Image 1 (cartoon, rainbow, N blue to C red):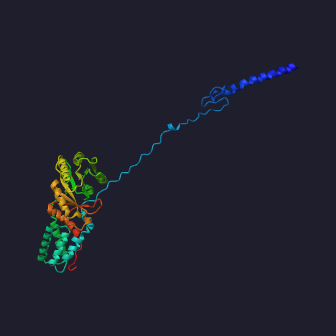
Image 2 (cartoon, rainbow, N blue to C red):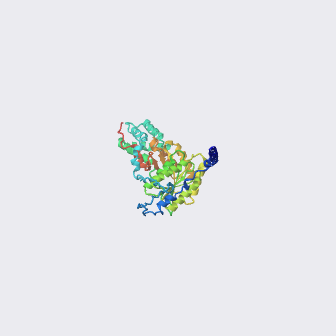
Length: 406
């Protein structure tokens, strides 16, 4: 019996020792991956694979699973193209009768030419003092000393001989003398028509601050209003804004602009503009040049170069000088120097609505023999009008003459 108990104890110790050696190894064994799970029993139960649309063992029709596309394979969203609105082309106002339509813009000048002068002439007694006042009024209006003396002398003589006393008659006499001083026989048409297969070439010059680029854009509108086709040359390469400004004016009326990089040779841009005008067969090439002071020799020489280079295509038909009416007699010196360099053939007088010195029109023509062809009477795009002496004087004097003794 004792031997049996001892044998059982030894057997238990042996079993415990064996378990102690095997347990660590069992703990260190890694778990089987999920992919290694034996699925043969499930496959045996399911049977062979079933194609989409067929019935399995249970009689259920197998449906084809939906195809899910990853996000990167979905067709990209195409943005709708941006709609760029093209502004409609503007139709400039006809130039015929434009000066009369703008007569109210001359109201500031009427103080001198209109009511002031007519009031003096309508006095009961036209003595020496009155005639001196009339003379002073005309000189103040920038008519010029020489022209003023001629106007007053002729007016005194006609008043004395005719014995004129009524306000209507005095107004008619004054208007006739002013129109005569403006030399109505001068040719004031813009020479901008094509000839010999080449377009008419108009060169626009002027000093800084005269409103040259703006006026150049308005001149393009005048030409287009009269039925011409136009190419503009942005030869003012010293100011980057000048070419942009000219482009804006051209876009409004459907005209083309030829421009170069900033600080490009102005003569080269002007040459290219005329060449483009020849290629496209337009009626007129309008060239805007940089503003310059008339006493800067280098700048004036450069303007002469522009003229010479452009004339390789043919003669320049019109050279318009842009003058600021508010500069008064200083404008005469500007006109004189520019005429010597580029042979100015016409004047466009700007800002005439902002001064009471409209007599500068007479001064320019008498001193230089250059006709005023265009006058600017406001800031609107169509406020540039062809100049016509009788309409101009009529607008300055107004429609209601003063009665004698007023």
